[in-house]
Amino acid sequence: MKLRSLALGFVMIAASCVASAASYTVALTTTSPNHLSASFGATPISGSFTDVFTFTPSLAAGSSASAYFFNFALNGMGQVDPSLQIIFSAADVNGTPFSINNSVPFTQAGVYVPSLSGPLVLTISGNSGGGSYSGVMNVTTPVPEPETYGMMLAGLALVGVVARRKQRS
Image (tube, rainbow, N blue to C red; front, side):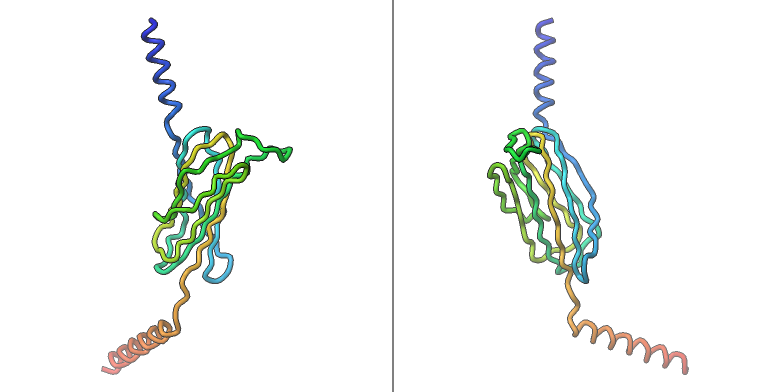
C-alpha cells in the first residue's frame, strides 16, 4: 500500500512539471497601406509554458516584421507581486530570436525581422508565476517598384496585340 501511494505521488509530481503548450491563431489587420498589425497575449498556467501564435494571412516575400511583448508583475495596488512574474526563456519569429530582458517587475522582449515570407509564427517560452503578458506584431509588406508596373502594362499590351491578331484571322 505504501509503495502504491509513493508511486502515485511521483506520477503527480511528474505531471505538474510538464510544460504546458498552447496554440493561437491571430488575424493581422490592415492599419495603413502596406502595413498590418495585431495584438496578442496569453495567461499561461503557473509553471513552464510554450505559446505559439500563428498570424494570418501569410506574408508576401520581402515583408518585414517587428514584435514586442511584456509582463508587468504589479498588483492592483501598484506593488510588485512575484506571483505575477513571468520569466521569458526564449522567443522567436520564424526562427529569429528575440532580445529578452527579465528585470523585475517589468519583463520584456522585442525583435525585428528584416525579410520574411509565408506563414508568420511567433513562439514564446518561459516560466509563469500566474501572470499574463501581451504584445504587438507589426508587419510591413513590400511596395511594388515602378518597373514592376511597367512590366505588367507591357505584358497586358502584348496579350491585347495577340488577341487582336487572332480575332482578325
